[in-house]
Image (cartoon, rainbow, N blue to C red; front, side, top):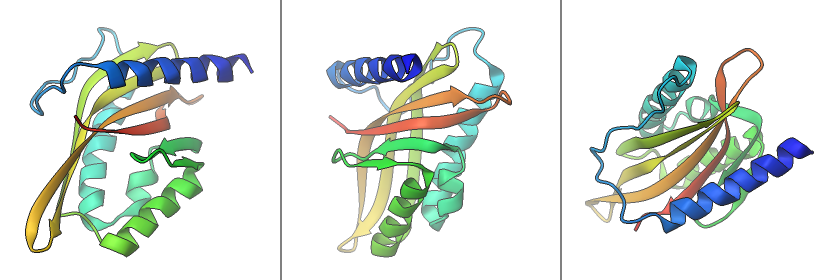
Length: 165
């Protein structure tokens, strides 16, 4: 129970900070990682971002949801909440069924904050699609909460997508 309250407080505080942040940083901003950060975390974030970019262009739902915990929560840009890996997987299956894979995907991790067995990653992402014969790129901000697992690896516990400014 205490962990849930701590988690909820941390999510609310970080979401508020993300919303109040000044203008977004340009895409080439390097990732800020605290000194001494678990190399398994850095590896998990790097792999998940790279795998996501490729998977989005191929419609590979399994690769997209692979880094999520079974009880993960995903909050889409419109505020819709998907609870559990199965619902997140269905979200992406429905999106691909409706629109197909994207032409290009780009995840830019801008900062990682570490708090014991939780890590908070913020950044931006973009999807490029062909709409009415024109390439259209849409950007959004994200806050991803990673949780260290009992085996020492890191998985996504929560992912919140916010509109870009």
